[in-house]
Length: 184
Length: 181
Ligand code: HEM
Image (cartoon, rainbow over all chains, first blue to last red; front, side):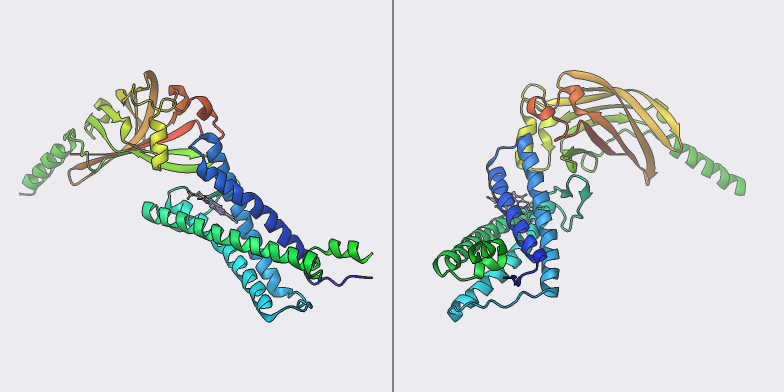
């Protein structure tokens, strides 16, 4: 049986690439925040920023792609509130994936540390150095991250429930190889 | 009458040209620096220093400077960094609270540029440094602006783990902006 993909290959690739990067960027952020100042901490801080900026770039590509290539509607029976909740979580995740790197970039500027992408491309400082603002943006970055962590947990839990409990095709839309294996 | 005015102007200009500046305006003078951390330029400053400078813009070659920098007054960009750089592996301010520069010669580089040579002492090590600078007179205030690159590892600033120059570059740019009356 030839599968009709709900999402394009590009959309699927972007989804998993961003997921992978976030799964690395997040713990790097937590680890480096707890470290005392050291050369390793400075390295992790830079890697964290480069990873985060990469997420931001990929997210913009993904949103543009999403607008140009609408996925097929989900053809799975579920309560209306679940459908709404899923939509809301997806939209919020997009918003957070945009706002988190942005807050990190602005925080860096406010703290007086420019972001130099991959050590070669200096990003403009949109804010002047301002300690109070820097601390506020740092707190915002943290709150947005905790919110995203909770939403990602819900997102994953829901995907797994659909696949293993409801046994519907929701997860297969984003992981087509799962469908191939089970349809054999 | 015209001759008289000309004579006065000549006298005035001579007077201005002969002026020697020696009162460093501590509140408006600054010593700042830029270090590179992971390719990111980070600005810092020394908030407290004393500078004894005597210079006549008509003959800057005769100028002399003696600066003493209170290293504990450093602003390295963040509180965490300030604490770190006062420690043993950086400036070790407990043992070496001050950095000192004593000029030995000033020469003209042409095009309104000069260069001060002298001895810089930090952390018990003394090295020869050369700092190019410019002079600008405006309304009785002389601005001396200059910058030079100092190699931190020459003085053992940032030793041990911190000697990794791929994280913190060896070259640190020092900038001075002195206003004299
Ligand atoms: C998807 C992108 C990102 C994620 C998931 C993320 C996640 C995190 C997390 C979880 C922390 C630890 C918070 C804490 O425990 O206090 C953190 C800290 C931090 N992040 Fe990000 N981040 C991202 C992007 C960025 C970007 C693009 C920058 C800067 C250009 C950045 C700069 C920072 C900084 C400087 C900290 C240190 C915390 C502080 O000083 O308050 N982040 N990040």
